View (spheres, rainbow, N blue to C red):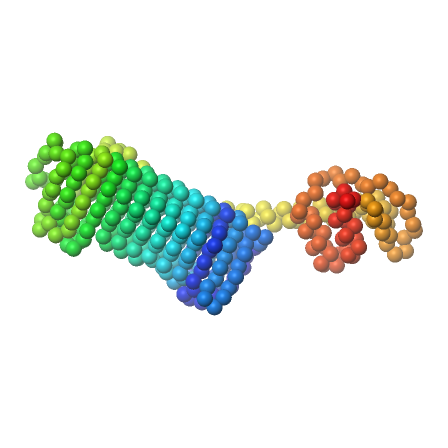
Length: 368
């Protein structure tokens, strides 16, 4: 199914439940374009909002200034080019967002990747790895179960991570940055940094010219420049602060920073292809069901020699001579709901009569 609906340039679009994967792409138009299995998809439009749900996979193209609210996504999700606010309550697979506005997320069950957000980012729970790059606003994450890689955040930062953290940061004079990690923290700063850094960890390594080493320290405060930005680092493992721009390239020597190695290329395109393939499969199943139902019709007609017989019913076509009752013709193929729908469709298209349709449906049920 492909459906297009006019919704205006700045609609509120509520996606209630997606049973499978979801792909969303923003565009310059004022229409909402939906692609998915017609039997799986529901749509409702009011003056206030547009509501969409789908029990399978779904692909959407939305006006790029739309406000999006997602309640439950059963599989993976990809969102690209939507500059209005985005709210997601629950994603049960991976989540990828690129080129967006402000983002608020309840729970991501697996990995999360973000590249380029013009507003704030808030995440309550991420149960996998998280990779974030280029956020104009604040970054607040209550809980990341695994690793976090963060680069290019231009607002304040407050994150709580279960395992390792890599942060590339250019702190502002009035900025506040707080990072808590269950394992190791690697912080990469420019040489011109003005910040006061408070650190706690099993070992603290400040790899910086002019700063003395203190191999025994588990707590330390270091001031760079005028110390105007405030940075707090607390790690269950080691803390490392450096101005080497390539430090993250060899981060495996310091900890397990899997988040730096996410490969999300083609993620949204993959979901969109899956939606298209699922839709094509559904259409093929419907066509096959229609052909199977037609074969049932032909067999019943041939078996009845001009009449339809099965079970307790025996209807004859006009002009046909009476025929003696015969045992029900055994179905050679299993009966599916699609076959029943195909029979009803043939009735609606007036290819068979109401009596023929009733006889066929009854015959498919074994003459009950």
